[in-house]
Length: 268
Image 1: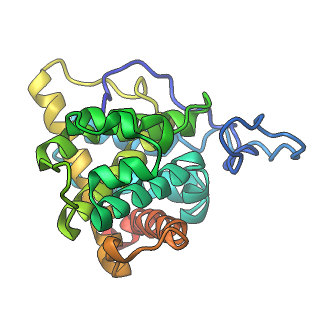
Image 2: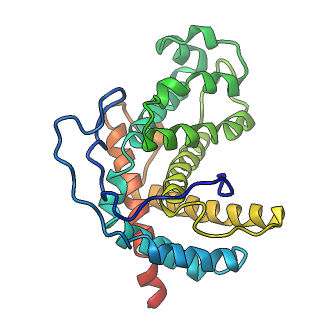
Image 3: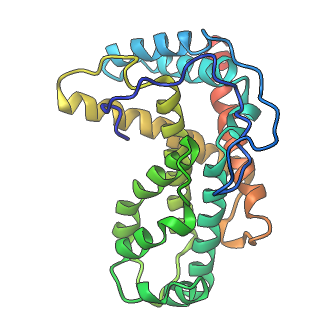
């Protein structure tokens, strides 16, 4: 997750949903589109304070984490719909990943590589194969959402390697869901960290404590994504290429809705 890296985070007056968010790879950001109004310059203030409280608790104050996540979605981003929309290219990458994994599930790894024009990757170790697919699944155009998509995908590679997917084997539903859960979670996590800003709170000096905080935060987001997928009744093996984007939109919107409602649930 890399929360210890330097990043000043989003400025509050950046638009809630940038004008370029629906541009495709290679498009000039905001071409022929009116500039959206700026956001409230203080909109990240309270989530950052609550995250600071969470960090100070060494990752054990779940109430602060829940309030931070809820206020981040509701107030900083303007609600779950805006939060999902501003993921931009990350949603397109999620859609392509579902398509590739679905093809491996139905046709096997080598046939999928051949179908997508990657014969040169056949026979390589599985992590090298998926690293070779990064430009196809997550094209890099230099924007923040594209960088988030690529980082989320690269962070996924150790899990894919652990699964031991072989040349002519498919991917079962359990494996496919696990991969997508982690990817969705990585995207939401990296978007949150980019917005809140890694310099907003001071991480502890103890590396074990840092790892514990990151692990707790990651599992929290992953649990939210898992609940979203379960609630939507998604079977990733049954998703056609035509329906993949609809599924992606539904998962992100539902996950952000769950996060948005956390503060209300804590008050009941």
